[in-house]
Length: 344
Image (tube, rainbow, N blue to C red; front, side, top):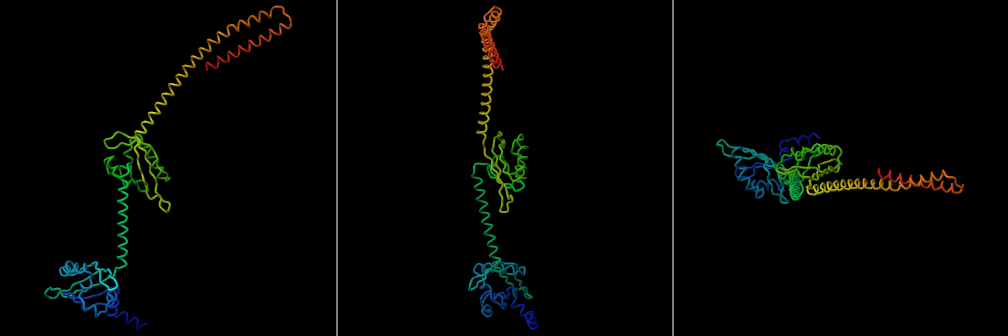
């Protein structure tokens, strides 16, 4: 164990087996020394590498960049950090970060360059995946914005707390503003409808229910118009509201026609009720007049029956008179009921 510890702590072992590539080359690019780690990555022996020039280890693009940019920086400032180069390997190129320090002689001429090569194949792959994901996200965003700008509605999205974070071009044109804070406060809704709209919206934010309301909104330089506003919550896989999607549809013509129909119907019902009341008065007057005309002879009949009752009669005649009186009285009561109901 002690011999192993001693071996892996020697300067030569640390140089040869360092977790990064180490290389030294002169001003002509001739490789003076290289460690085993870099040789393994390059797929060559140390002797093979030392027979090459440093720039031959790079791809064509890397070679040009080194000569045009890196060499000048090493000469002027004496170092470079984290230059991304692609190194040539017989089994496939690999990406690495190049860090170097240059050394000059007493006359100020570049003498030697010591460099570290840090292999970043996995990191490069990860960065590439991130870049692709970013591009896909940007493409999705562009498609979403294009779609939202083509629909005929006013369209917007909000954060879970109700703060507007995107509006389509139609919203900007309608209100002549891109002030998202102004739109968050329902400032486009006419004052008479704004307070109730904000109360309803607040309840929706608290409960996660859909906002669905007909309100009047007023665009820049426009008269107030009726719109149907609907704001739907979008839930993520965890069941939490991730954002809200809102749209506003112009229903002004439909609403005005609807209100006109309601008004016309109300006027028709009022006229019908008035007509019924008028007919009721006429019917009552007719009923009263007819009642008087019918009850007058009926009263005469009842009076004559009373007079006949005072005369001496046979028992059978008296019974018939009593029945006649009952029928006349019953008829009188029925007439009174008809007149009473007609006057209600």
